[in-house]
Image (cartoon, rainbow, N blue to C red):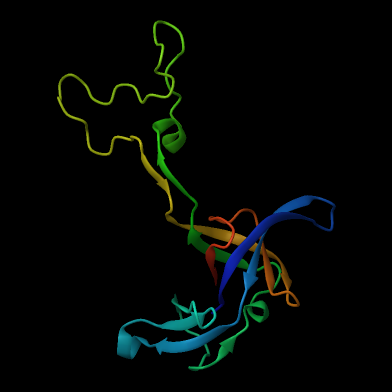
Length: 185
């Protein structure tokens, strides 16, 4: 069972052995402390609860699965993962606030010509004349982002044990400083 918690540092790029540029996201990892073990007999599922952070901002997370851990063990995340591992990454995406349909759903908007003067970014017709109501599930303007996003199949490009960094291929949801959960597949 491989897992880690870290903070998103930044995106950068690395050159691989063939000279091709690869986009990577740097994650700063800190040691985790095992605080609770859940078992299928007692709790109905197997999980490991870990504690992350300093004394002021302690955070507890659970990772489902079994592992050879005892309460009080320190888990060094840089020792757990190796280059080439495939992981599942979860984080909270950037919040964008209240947005219109063009930004939120990718609507094309209306034409500038043919008598439409101020309708470039409007949604257009949202209901027909027969129903006299707006159907449920109609895509409209609203709050965008700030959702939990999980990306599956991300590869670990490099592990820097000296600086406590994990470099993952591609982009990871969230802004800089976002808490990222990493779990081996």
